Image: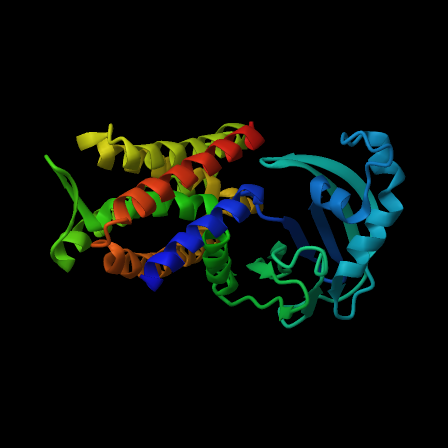
Length: 363
């Protein structure tokens, strides 16, 4: 009974917390070009994050203007220069611009320094360290020898701009970034949870019944996870490579809609034999939601393939970890009389409600 109460408590906690969480995580993008005697840096920071940190909206009308941002350039410069430290280099601001990216408008700072920069040069990054501990900087480093390094910069942690002789590398931090992306991607996890809730049950003429064996539960779980993985891996690669582009204005509400459909199907089954096909189709939509950071780096060739592999491996690792936590708990609860009304129907109802809130926010 305690396990059942804990499960219900967790669902209630999710209902209280998740509606306030947006899908898009806070990320800034850096491109470092190392010359023989100089270093040039492009630093792209989301205006929504700068406004949260510096209160750029001086008139309080909740709409940033070009004038408000231009008046704040000195404060933005100070924030950026204080957040990025390159050993042996005294960076200075050489220009400003704006860039429309897939998730909104970014302030662009051009930085430069007359210094030597090599693969062993330590970098320290601390942007928004106190404001948002989940923030990351995604950096592409073009070395003087033609090699390319991709780094995920964790605020407060010093890293070296290492590369190798093969011409490009993507560091293991991209794997960690993939794990973080799925674990903090609450909408993706909620969609997966909606798919898993009925996996320990089977439906017959008398309604939902608990499965009798692990095998009967394991096969549906493997099928669900495989379909979702194949689908989102496909569109992740297509979107990150730039071959297929869909606006977040469509993708983000669509992701919320997939949660609502999966949740409502648990309460009033209407997908029937189409559930597997719909799961695959919805997985394609979720793949576009995963692609933002890699797509913004504009990598090519082996650098892109390596980065995509590590990032996707991290996504799948996080997804498997979530499944290994959730499915055994559902297995233990499946025979409880209240599982169907409270966990399956109640949990799905909460998920549908949260999805509706997300959809309205994102629209």
